[in-house]
Length: 432
Image (cartoon, rainbow, N blue to C red):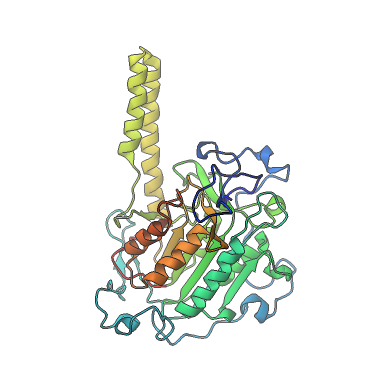
């Protein structure tokens, strides 16, 4: 099933092969190839037009809803007590050999993040610095899994993804159950349902009162998609969105809004790790620094754009279509100029002094698979992330990106992405 627009059956292209029955499905849009996405408004079943931005909810209260009890809402109104361990917590990560506990005296492990402020470097805004997080402060997690029960486009593995991720965070990285908010659509408590209102409220809770070296974790497994970009920050003309369980009436949540809520308020040295196991999620948090499997920043591929444009111009010229050739030259120049302008704008406006890392299940143009692995329904990205770290907790950022891709290689077409809110030394030890 595709983790994209939850429309009808067979959504998101041909089923992937591998892992046996039932065949994995894509978390994507039904019957819409990437170049035609998003679907026209009338395809959404006639529910009201969806706003590009949602009202910003207050952290406590609001919406006229009672304050949930701590045991059901992960300590929503509580300030988690400081943790006493480093990264990852001693004796909480059984996968680490003794010599590498605490990353002191280990051999072959990448270096830990530096503690001093870092300059942004070439291409980034001047006069600013950012701070890596040691991830040895408070820990809070928001985990969202939506199977869309009873709706067209129902998924199977999203709630399992959240259960597996919460177990992994608790057992390997010291996230306490009472410091996790879990929103899934199999819960009876209406405050624990992954509605748009509850998701936005929980996002505010996640980042509230965060301090340097705190470690925040956001995990979303469900449908994702795209919508026309209204503010010019997307070079392909589309914003990325996620679909709450009540999206048909409440609307989707746009990447611009998620960035505003979860990235903008963070101080230097606060870590937010975000995982989006959904379609079209490559830039779902609008982080401006996207990294390749070689650990270098991906900039706009202007040479590729130019090559494709020139082919069209040459073709028009060969047909003696001088008008088409001139139009092609004008369009090519505009496309290249616009792409670079958008990239530079995002570097100026969306670079952050905080330490925000995002792992996404696919490129913006791709779907993400809802698979069956080991007899359990699961999202391919969520499974690959956990499995890659279990096999080797001592990996650098670029090593982990390649390890995650290796887990999916030959089974799925999707290409997980790594992006960051600041220039990242991808050879440093990945901490969380």
